[in-house]
Length: 113
Length: 110
Figure 1 (cartoon, rainbow over the protein chains, first blue to last red):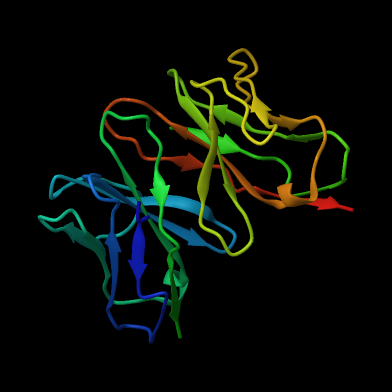
Figure 2: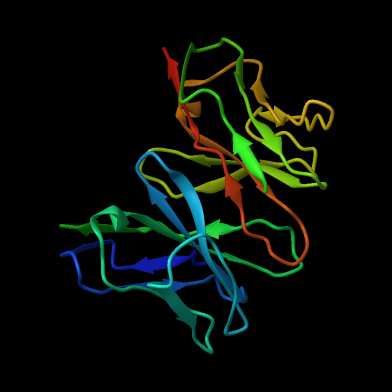
């Protein structure tokens, strides 16, 4: 089966701009999680989408937002980019009420200059 | 609030030696605990979970609720075990968000 895919692989933006990151879950998976992996901070939970709705968000400002489409793919938007937003953004999908296993994508490396 | 602590950022052992990667957690309820692994140039993937009590690639991990630990062990390390290892927990309920430790980079030397 095809795994979780993310695009783009790399994204370079300047401070103040907006970034859009995309994620396609494994077929049949309806939940998508976003995580930020910043240097020195480890992997931190960002957002959870399930059945098209935002269900939970981590300790991040509102300029981090996103959405989930009817086909369960998801988009993460980061507005008013700051230098500290530079990180690897990982997307994971899961079957709700399944085995709790999250399947991760390869990530999008966002660099803010 | 839940927290996962991996006290060692780096761990280096020789091939054939035993290896133990430490993980401690804090959570008031009954968490589900996992070990995820990231090999070089590969994506993050599940190694094992405490509820299945299985051994994967020779690794085992036992949940010790008294010590709130979930250490990962392997009796004889192999060079291909070199990777970044993350301990993580899910607090339960309907939100399956993972709380990760900061990871331990394991290097197995020939």
